[in-house]
Amino acid sequence: MESEAAEVEMRRRGHSVSRWSPTKEQISTLENLYKQGIRTPNASQIQHIVTRLSAYGHIEGKNVFYWFQNHKARQRQKLKLKQQNVGSSNHFLHASQPICQNVVCGPYCLQQSGTGFYSQQPPKVLASGVSSSIVTFGLQRMCDGSQRNELLQQDYNSRTSNHKALTLFPLHPTSILEEKSSQVPSLASFCEGAIDTSSAAHINEDAHPENLPFFDFFTSSHVSD
Amino acid sequence: MESEAAEVEMRRRGHSVSRWSPTKEQISTLENLYKQGIRTPNASQIQHIVTRLSAYGHIEGKNVFYWFQNHKARQRQKLKLKQQNVGSSNHFLHASQPICQNVVCGPYCLQQSGTGFYSQQPPKVLASGVSSSIVTFGLQRMCDGSQRNELLQQDYNSRTSNHKALTLFPLHPTSILEEKSSQVPSLASFCEGAIDTSSAAHINEDAHPENLPFFDFFTSSHVSD
DNA sequence: GCAAATTAATGATTTATTCAAG
DNA sequence: CTTGAATAAATCATTAATTTGC
Image (cartoon, rainbow over all chains, first blue to last red; front, side):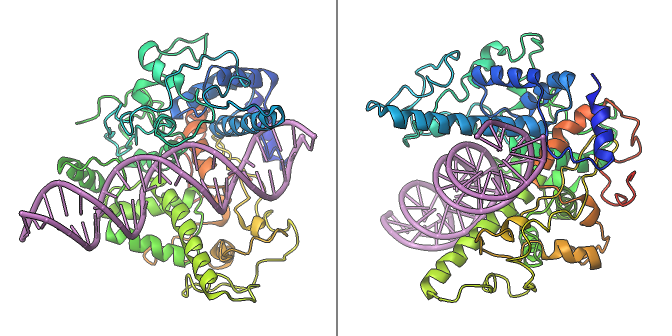
């Protein structure tokens, strides 16, 4: 439905609408995604999620971002409390089980080689100067050697998606989702998207006058190198 | 063109460009801005800064954002160390002096009324659906009642600019800078800018087909209120 | 002088904490 | 009381300074 117009109206009329109120569908979808292992969606993922969930009501990228941020944190602290109560002793390699039983948590993490991971993608720069910062997702941190034995299903899908295009939304196997959108670390990427792109927009406005007002998540592969 | 060239240059010289290396000019400008009181520039401020600093080399919004984030934090911890060494006892209302002697730190902060500050601007939404999330800058937290007696020159200019249009860049007294750009809380706003704008753009693209790819920093006074 | 090796700065991310709307 | 939103603190990782041995 067009809750968008309604909300814009509402906001324009001074009504607070100061905070996003997710619909049931939106929440359940987000929870599903979380269960599938999404922890910190990157720009393209968020873009996708927003696009899909917009069908159920107004939603913005930051809402999605914050939702995952908060959900992750609160699941974690919930877990912490639980474990505290149970007082289990062998808290070594089996975290996250109580949280999401649905996701496969491969034993791929912890104690890998020191800094061997993060060269998945070479730094790539888009023609418009929108560099896609790349790489460092969060895995190498967990695998680093420090004892961050928190959750560890972090980017299971981020990595698998390189191979099989992860079914973020069962409805749309549109691929995209990953790979070329280049693992940009969520927040900063938006930043760059919002700001630098705008400047880029009036710099070479003729580049994509079509319907990509700020960034092409999809073409970014072949730049000008 | 200029900034791209610089970066391309850098890349050609074998530098991996995995991280932004500010030029001298960029740094000094940023430091000046900081001294002028800018702590957490919002989207429009960042946009402006980027536009200006692009003349000196490649730079993106996120770079500016992170720079302020880091600089603020590190100045703060530097200060903390200093104070620790001095062991001054009457730490009550005179923070931030050691950091930036150039900025006027009015005694306007701490112990104001509880939540009186952040209603400077009513939530405003641009026609394109790019809501400018608004408000909460960071001041209300400091002034709130909690004892965050850290710095407090936070948005001195944010407030003064309401009256006298703060000279962010001596070169360009273009005003803008504040007021109407509605104090959007930095990060999230980019997020929204990057994501929501795109989706919104093809929803009602006809809103501002002119040359305002996502926000008009300059005209924003008479939006559609 | 100069590169390899160390150290210091600092750019970039993630996590924790806090505020406040509903 | 729950949770969306925002900021600050902590942390990681890379670049620049610098030291060191030749």
